[in-house]
Length: 545
Ligand code: NOJ
Image (tube, rainbow, N blue to C red; front, side, top):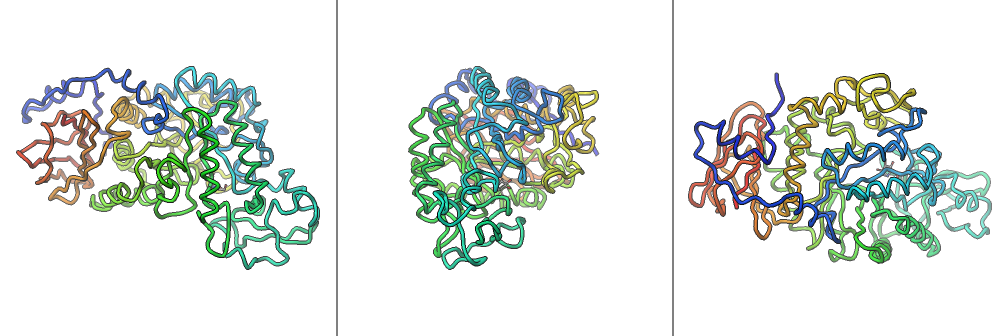
């Protein structure tokens, strides 16, 4: 079966729609703006992150410059133009600091350096300069909750019970504590306490034993981490992705986002606001509302990852009904304070590749990408998603490595990633899904995503506009309206994968007739109502004002 969905570039969409459709009435052509100028305006100033396309990079796997098989910062710098051409505005780098790599860098042994495998501080400066010269931004991963067990702070703390950093970590005579009712995070072992023979006590860790939790009840710990944040902000990074940030404090009252942790996040935000146009995104430690990460809307995080979409979307997309998706995004709008921005991911370094999660059915990922690009929130892509990259088979650190294999860029040994031997084997079919191959194929995943991102670019309604779910009498069709002050768009996504479906949104009250921008669905205004027709696994993005 051919799963390729025809893609029409936004600029020529109206013309093509008019030429190729014999049954449709002529569509309106709304006055077009200079989208490049609009994009520049929207991506400037403190609200830039609402309109940016973020791209998560595992530096180890993006591009090797030195031939040692390990991706590095100079390699990443050399690929900025490729990423920009895809439509990427901002990078989130998974941890780049020195680390023994018990958890792919989420076990930091020096917060003020660069992992020698990845390069030097000067290489980071060069990356920042090159990114900024292209109008791109760079966010670092900030691991606040725990350090490596090789971090000098921990090495000192474990010496005895009286050293200056004795209570920088959480120690107990027993593998428990009456004040800490918190167990290990699922997937990170059976216990949250490990005995340290030197100190003769147990230390607390929500993650692996090589990742002892810092004790945020000690104000010196919080102050030291604010120093770390300032160090990187002074260097010019554009913000942080804050790892499991809700877990900083534990108390009998709870383990996640307790008031003291919220207060600390406010301090971090105050520091961040001392620098222009910086932003932070929160990683929740689990499911549930992200509202606590936003505080009043301007005093905590600018963005938080929406795990309640990230986890279930492959099931929702395949289930035939649009209801769960409509309900999820409508409820999110209600729950978040004004100013809050969701960060929408389809996958990340902790998940299986989309290819695996969708059973290899590319058109499921494509419809999800349409939702990611057009629902309220900021899209965060994970490197390789643009190729619908296949999972790897080799594991070096842990099973998640299957979604962390190197980018196949072009033909030849090392597939353009390295001139040496890659640190981990490429995933299946890598040679067939290189960036070069996919760029040359107008039906490829890469071409699809590039067209979608180009459509979102410079359209304020998608990054910051209002959302209205349009109820359709056919439950398989997701239909919604996004509006900014002077433009309105309708998006239709079909959940039926085998039949064309048509339905009526009786109370759509669209401001104008539909101009097709992308996709094969059709939308016809009938007074207050609108008729939408969607081919199997189809979608449509329409301008209606
Ligand atoms: C969340 C990160 O996404 C994950 O990869 C890591 O293992 C844990 N935090 C611990 O830092």
